[in-house]
Length: 145
Image (cartoon, rainbow, N blue to C red; front, side):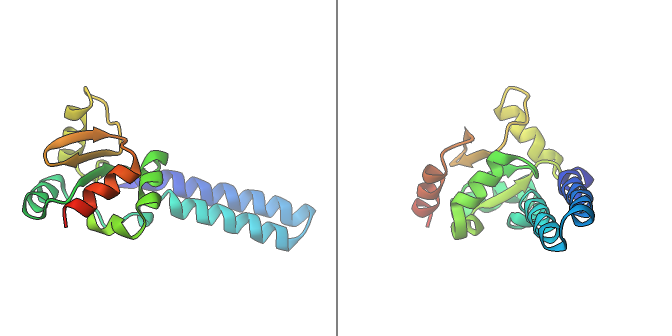
């Protein structure tokens, strides 16, 4: 669980340091804008940017019932963030599994990717798809309704 917060915490700490240096040398307004930018980046790279994760076993059970895709992801992954942003509101219709907080999810991803934890790994109808195009994932969400 703490691994997911290392990058966001580092971004806020680094932004605070940079903003303090800018505030001393230039202006408080510029320093505030820099700090705000780092806080926003930290938020985007934190687990808060994603819908609430569930366990891999629960996601598989739910997907078997409703046919919705399962997305295995981890915080700090730029490809996971790209998928999340490009899915927009439809991201809430997908079952999200954080592989850093769910050992079964991590094992499932390693099994699908020759021992690597490559994310996002999307499972649709039992088929694994590594880093698929977000448009394709949106189509799969639409067809599962």
